[in-house]
Image (cartoon, rainbow, N blue to C red; front, top):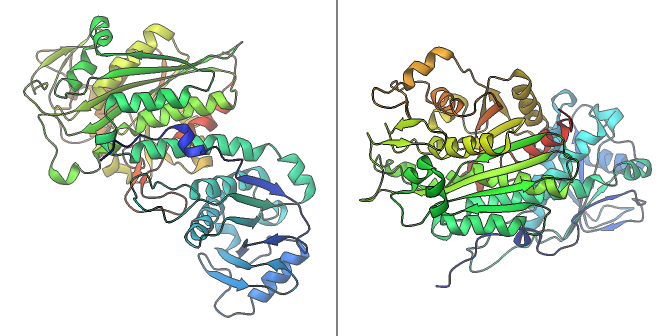
Length: 511
């Protein structure tokens, strides 16, 4: 069998023209294969006569009242040039939010892919009637449509389906003019989100550390980004003892990738560090069988960071943004690091290895200390599928945010609310640091208690950031889904790319 290639950015864009378009065309004269009309259960959210007429006719059917998730398809509706109109229920007005709209557009696009429809027109609700700012609701609908239009069929021998070629959003002429640049912005961010998804979904046998790093380098290659790759020999020469300890059991050598977007006149320096474990067996502390099959996703933090830096460069954000991705494979072998071993980190502290499955925090601390020493960033954020304890605490849809900086933590949470990449702030109690004490080294990589593992992992990381403004995002829950959602297929979710892009866009360009 020929070796498959890991996804690169051009695999996502496929050389296509823009998919998302705004239009204010005459609805009575527009020819379209399919039209989607969101309908509210207890209020009108449209004011165009042609749309109100279609909704009025739909309400004559007892099975459609606009309740959430209700759907009615009308074929060849009279007085139109539409092949079909799909009316989809949003529920009651007070329950509608931007993600409701993001979900219905994603769901509709997925349905059209299955029906092999190549284009659609989606009617955007009126801001004054739905009581949601137009920029918020439109951006959400654009995101849902683009993300729902992604397929991961690299390993399918027969490609049954193709993405839609064009997705149009109908609005009033003055709004089309006002928001004319928004579709391209959304496509840039969502292309990078899709890229992160596909990297995560790629199986580990085609995603050795060198493969994954080459893919990230290739994706960044056409952007104004400086690229540096530290190979195993360089990591050894520079004293990256924690990264080397994690990779010791694998035949695939580690590396560390640095993507540096540094625009002219840049203000602040933002460092993003992403965990890149291309497969995590647990090492000598081998994971149980049920925990192994999805461990191809343990590099999701690195995928998110690389994709966010690429998106930021495309959108010409004013700050310097540095992405640092330590990339390793954690395997058991005769050469693997053992429980009880003591290693010296890049920062200089010694760490006693209490558990080889607590490996993500080890590669992160070397990369974080490197970021602090070399770049003295104004803000440092690490992103990692770090602990099962965070999934126990917050479930599979919410990431944990840990920070001593109230302003930074709140900014992350606000961006998560906007993008529906939800986060919850977790505590960092000083006395929990006692649980990381080692009798033989400066610190242990695992807590002496079996409780509060997400907290003690974050506290471990905090020992390597100095006085830098820092936040840690534990995305172990939402980075991967086993069943598709309204605007995401099964596999990698790209969680955090849109959130970080929103955050980076809003950060001031001056100190």
